[in-house]
Length: 109
Image 1 (cartoon, rainbow, N blue to C red):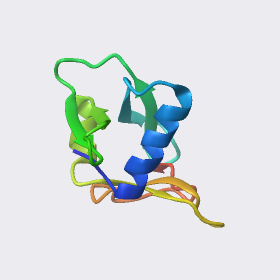
Image 2: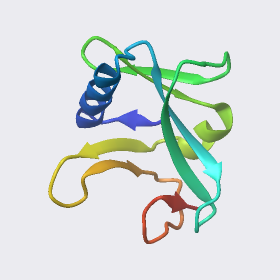
Image 3: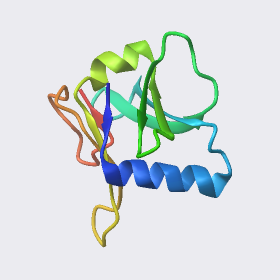
Image 4: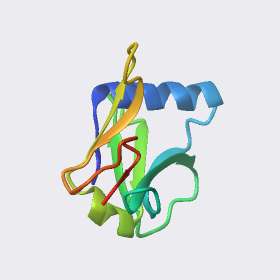
């Protein structure tokens, strides 16, 4: 399962609140594509399958993350972080399962 840093959990909570969608979960998935073979996909989702892997984060456990079974294997041990600086702002996934990444950092193999 992917792990969220505290800063990522805070940002996800803020985005959910801004959208008025606190009942949704952050879905993190891996899809075929990108210049290195696989690409990451993240979106808010209310359609949680019975076989999805689920994890809660934040002080109140109010940030929920779901991952489908196929993606879970490729995201095992990965970390989702959020940085808010002049450079490298945004979400970033550090994945120990990636043997190669592209220059843009959005795809891996």
